[in-house]
Length: 303
View 1 (cartoon, rainbow, N blue to C red):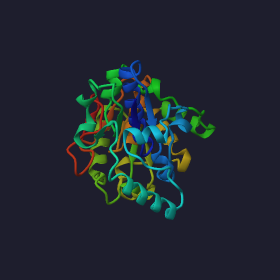
View 2 (spheres, one colour):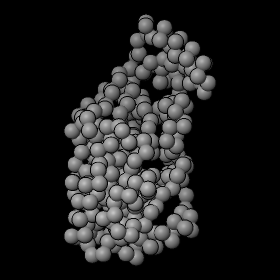
View 3 (cartoon, helix red, strand yellow):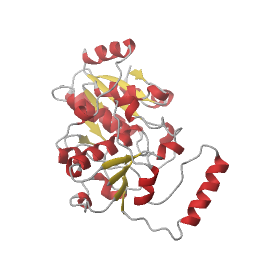
């Protein structure tokens, strides 16, 4: 059995699902490939919780707590109340002093997550595996011969308002501009200043006439105060459970200026299947302040 841990926001979940599909393609005929989504039991309020089924209608085969415990480590069902959760963890810590998992564990973060990890080339399927990571690359889709627009299809139809927005995007040289602030501010992800967006806008203007910038941001006041070089832009922002609609609308623009964000990555990547000729995607050369890594497809322009 191969158990793959799912965690994080929607963009990370999509990378994890692409990896899951790759593992199914490589090993599904020889062993079970299943998901561990228990992270969301105790983090259901982080971002918007587990979204793959609600947004894309994806129903994953899931490992039981007993199966997870056999491969990784034993832990009980997570409780919503802090006191019970605290006591449960104390009990687990005591038990794990002598407990030895029967399976093998791959912890795939850091530099190895940005390209295909050779560790997955020849897994011994006579053993159980527990794999956790983010797999921030399209190498796994390439390995499995999959396209993002084929495995990730939005479940619900757009609202009339968003349909009208798409019509507007398709009728002009539209450029999606993703400016992520909020939870990035003051962290290792807070690395994109206005200079990046200024230079990206200049590149777009060199390559297309009269571009119209559709700005997707959780801080429009910041954009208005600091990015006047875009001129009269079109603000777009969905909140809460509807925030995934921003990703869908990003994918429908002719061009895109991406942020250093997995959400932004998928907004651009899903646009590859929109049939737009001469599409330009610009992404930052650096993903995080503390890592020398890029989150971008091979054919994107880096600034």
